[in-house]
Length: 133
Image (cartoon, rainbow, N blue to C red):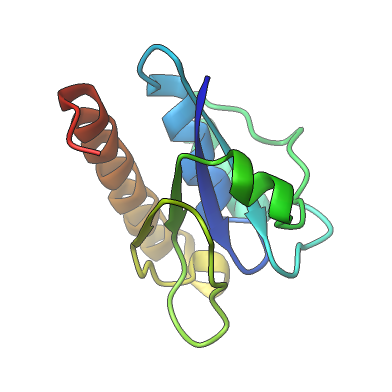
């Protein structure tokens, strides 16, 4: 099984959304996980709400710390955050998506970030299917 690791700071919003979308639409033989360098206590309530709008329940998810083991198991790492606090990831293939933090945004603005994450995840899946990674 090949793995995509979605990474941000708290693993409470962007990376959780990306993981959920990837796992919903994952190509055969692929899975996703997510982690953060300073994990929050819980997934952000607006992330749960926005994903329920998409028919995906992430309320049971718990933010986790990014470990060396997660990095070593990952075939692809996607850094979804932006700014100086974003982690450095040591994996063969790393991408930086530089998504703004929706945690303090009004729900309507956060929804736009969610939709952009979905689009990028679907593009990533297409590149994987074509063998472009």
